[in-house]
Amino acid sequence: MAAVTEHRAGKEERVAARVTTETKALLERAAAIQGRSVTDFVVQSTVEAAQRVIRDHQYVELSLSDRLAFVEAVLSPLPPGERLTQAAARHRQMLER
Image (cartoon, rainbow, N blue to C red; front, side, top):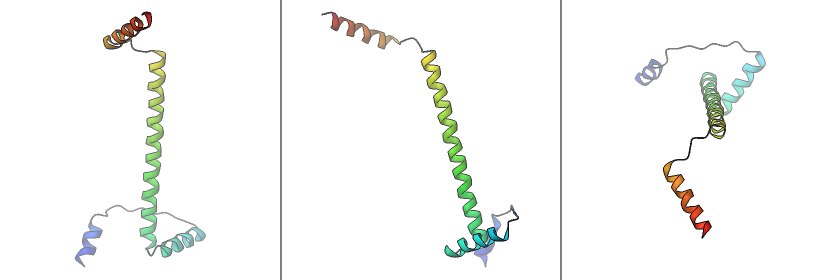
């Protein structure tokens, strides 16, 4: 009994949803196939979907910022550093020989 109390102690929030009879039957069937309660199935499936949405959003967000940084670098490049300037000069000298 102590394990059940500890398990429930961390769950303080509640989520409710109204669904059609068909949706409830679908959830019950899927939960039964996995040997889980409907509540456990719905919570776990929802958490996985939420994590996937957030991960996909972050990927798109990072990709957009990366594209913006690339375009900015192409349109407004920084001047070459000292080492690059020296390397270009050495390269020119080698070609002139």
